[in-house]
Length: 91
Image (cartoon, rainbow, N blue to C red; front, top):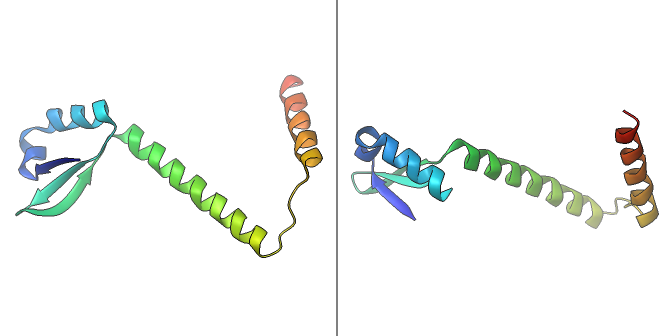
């Protein structure tokens, strides 16, 4: 875990930006010894947001399944995949 005082972002922006990009991890900034902000590079943030969105979607599908939503057979999925491939091939 990377922890820096809040003044570090003002005094060492390039160093903190490089650390975020190199490690893919957030840097936690403190103010008066207490947690205040989290800084991370844009690529890592976007990846994390996509993972969270996917998790929410998967949880919603699982919840719907638990409450009786009809699923798809393997044959349905194979047919849909073949149709998608054919659509891509045919433009």
